[in-house]
Length: 121
Length: 109
Image (tube, rainbow over all chains, first blue to last red; front, top):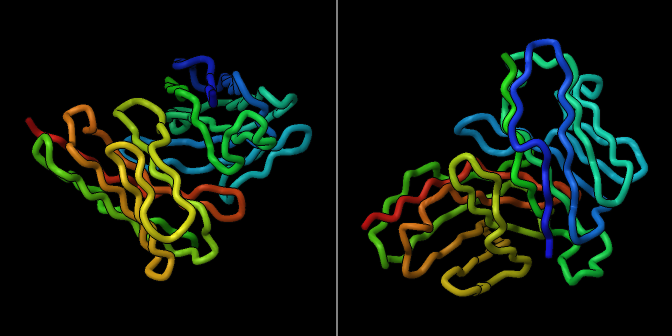
């Protein structure tokens, strides 16, 4: 159990375009999903917390109009990087938490997706 | 500012030895603590979680928690070359994880 997928695994885009990244919990229902960003040689920085059916909560310094998050179902959250620029190039990782604990998973453990490497030219 | 501090390393240990990784945290409210392993270019993989003071063992891994000292550690017994990775310590409070910068472990043949 506790499998989280992300798509795409990598993407290269031109400056000014938008990129959508999907995060899915495959075998449990994720009431809460998290989006992180990791620059080389640095740790994971939380960008936003996404709760199913409600607006995402963004961390200080993260532009909500640039990083659009939608959590439309209990198994899917999307992050759209709008008008991407080279400084947005990073490793974007989502995680999901099993809110119900029905699958025997701890309700406070975050399970990470494989990440999406974004390169903006 | 909630902080989780780790020595960045690299920590080099010979194969078969015990690797000891340490972490301190600043938020006394934190109740849950996690160790993740991250290979280069990959996302973090959960190794251990610990919630109570004392030791928790799982195979070759032992996590130790001391809330009074705000200290968490991870011991890896019989270290293998495949254990070479960056180990991230994380503390949870307010339903969010705060990560340390990670300790790079190198297990040498």
